[in-house]
Image (cartoon, rainbow, N blue to C red):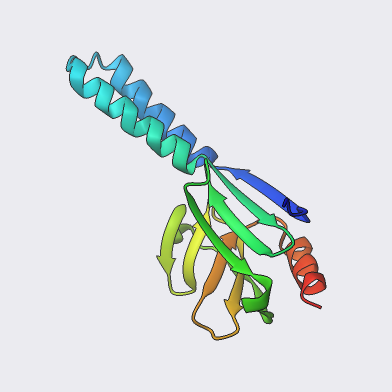
Length: 147
């Protein structure tokens, strides 16, 4: 049975894509001669791009999910475990980096340094922390779905 999607935000990791393109460009233009090593490097770059090129945040009938790239790395919090009174906006400093990071606020999924939404579970053991440009909209939907 399909669930209705209430909200969907996709953020592309332009910083990561730019760094990887620069890295590949340097290898190509430097005349790298090790042909076997070249294939391995390109494979690793392709895997990194597939896993981290975008971050998608979805709110459906059951909760909120954040997933990177092709969906291999994801994080989910269901409505029944969510404490909506803990929803807060977090400023993400540049030194947190991008990707999946362990921070003092919890494990963050982000593609840029800006803002994130942080939600705690009712038992305070689980933290959902994801970068977003649509904090107010997400908060509004989560409050509505939890009532």
